Amino acid sequence: MDKNRLNQAEHLIKKAGSINNSSETIREPREGIINVKLFEAALKDLMEAEDFIYSSLPSHKLNLEESKLFTRKMLDARENIHGILADFGVMEKAKTENKVGELSQGFLIVTTKNNFKKTLVKLGIDVKQILVAGVPLDIEDMKEINPKIPEAALKGISKKIEHVNNDIKRKMEKMELKKILIIAEPDASGEILGKRGKDLYQAQIALENDLKDLSADKLIELLLNY
Image 1 (tube, rainbow, N blue to C red):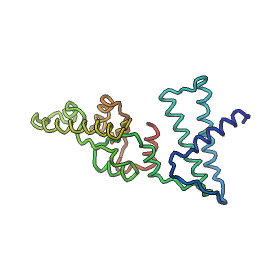
Image 2: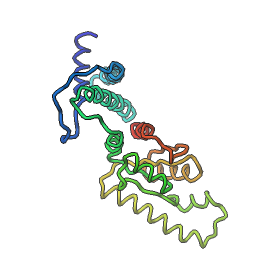
Image 3: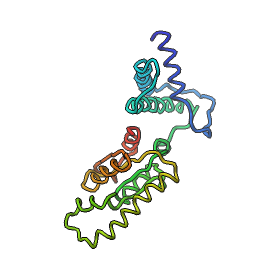
Image 4: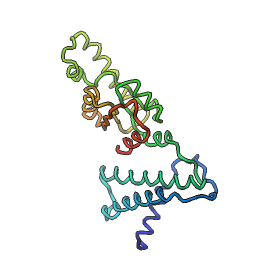
């Protein structure tokens, strides 16, 4: 690596390893063994992130898609650097729930069932950031799900739909959330909710099989994608 690239890598390492939680304590290092796999993974992510510095010259401005790729590489590198420092006692090992909580900041998570909500809370999502939409977001979608539904039943469902949309807007405003991520299973309800959520709220959509068995690693991957 030439001097310029070395200096750039050092800058990226500092940025990736920066701590955004002021309450976290940095300790004196103890004896330890370097986790070479983590080091190599961090370096690989940093080198791939570095490519954006050169490809974005002279302004270094990234579009939305590039921003997602760049920041994901930085977050992955930071996680690996954190793991190395934790092995030397400098930092505490990061808990998966903490990472999920950190990555989900600014998100409203919309899902279709209460048991999916329980799974998301267990994995580290703040319960206040989760909304269960037991009905679609538009009355026409209800007719698509059940074409034979009686008109009388639609009146009651229409009220529920109104409440769900009001809850979405209220949570977004009150909690100052910036993005909506719909996490549901790829059935009719999930697909229709996702499509309408994208139209109404520019929501991102993640349809996953067996959502009640969602793993922490998979949830982290979903959050990193958005």
